[in-house]
Structure formats: C-alpha cells, structure tokens
Amino acid sequence: MIPDRILRKIERCLALSQSANKHEAGTALRHAQRMMDEYGVKEVDIAASAIDRIAVKSSSGLNPPAWLDRLASLINAAFGTATVYEPSPTLNGWQGRFAFLGESSQATIAAYAFEVLQRQLVNDRKSFMAGMNQRAKRVTKIRRADAYAMAWVSGAYEHILPVKKTDEAVAAIERFQARFYNKMESMNAINRGQKRDDHKAMARGYEAGRQAQLHHGVDKERRQELPHG
Image 1 (spheres, rainbow, N blue to C red):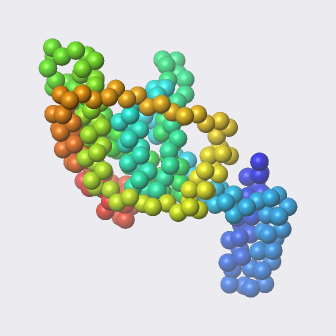
Image 2: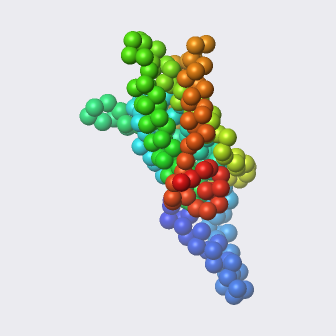
Image 3: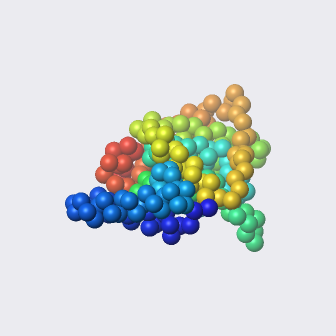
C-alpha cells in the first residue's frame, strides 16, 4: 500500500506544478513524476486520495431495511457518491451507518441530505404505522409500513436530477474502497416484500415522498435538485 505521506507529497508537487513560475512549476512536476515512478503511483491513486468518507448513523442494525438502502441509492444518484453500509456491534446489538464516498463537498452534502431525508422518512413511516387498524397483525403492519416507505422513496425520486459519474470518478472511489476497507462483503437488505392489498399504503407513501424536503445547509446548486424549506 502506498503511504499517505507519499501521496500528500505528490499532491503538493502537482499543485506547485500549476505555478505561474515556469521554473518552479517544472521542478515540482519532475519531482512528482519521480516519486510516482519510484512508488508505482498511478493517476487513479492521486484521484483516490481526494475521496472523502462521511458516515451517518442509520435507524437500523446489522442489516438495513430495503427502504433505507433505496434512500441511500437516491442520494447517490443525486450527488454522484457511493455508499458502504457499516454495521458495528454495541452493548444492545448492532448500530448501522451509511458511509458516503465521494469528493469532499459531494460526500458532505450527500451525508447531510441522507440524514435529513432519513429523519423525515422514519417519522412518516412511524406515523403511518400508528394510524393502521389496531386489529391488524404485527407482521402485516410492518410489511405495509415497509411498502409505504419504499413508495415514499419512489416519490422523492421525482425531485432529483441524476448525476452521471465519470469513469475516472468511479475508478477513484473504487480505489479508495480498496485502500480504506480491508474486507467488504455483500450486504443483504431486509425486504419483506409486498402483497396486492398493500397498494393503498404504497399510494400514501408515494404522495408523502413527493413532499420530501431538504432544509438549510445544502449549497445553492444542490438545493435546486430537491425541494427545500
């Protein structure tokens, strides 16, 4: 693995290579090239060093429900990020986190957006579940609440402008993942499925998702991609 200090030195040299002083710029570029050759550093390694990781607590444990995983996918589509689900053991079980990977500003905004929308989605799902017929079986309530939540995310999808990631950005994130995570396993989101009589729950969830709001804290450009209060 390439030491971080080497990557930082190369980054500094590449930054200096943009200097208006031609002599200084040339010297810095040659120095960067020598270090890249010596340590086998490729351009994708430099790009990966600019990737940031911002983690947000989720309202789930070892495995997240499918509707939260879908919400993370919505955020990735809107901000050009990638997500890794990170469960960790606690005294009471497991605490899950969604880590958003991308350039620093993208990862920060994506994490904020997920935090805001997750709060709204969880609260709306709880309210929906509380209003269900008390005679309904618990398994039915949970399944319909999940169907509501999945449709909620579908409704929120109406407001995003998908960002197409470049091949270079994808490669940089993948290289970051390989360096940051020693081992990655497939994540199995909890999907309780849907039945034909869940359509009313889905219709209500979809309409609620269309009212999703992002509040202050997202930069001007991104505020245009989701409604805000």
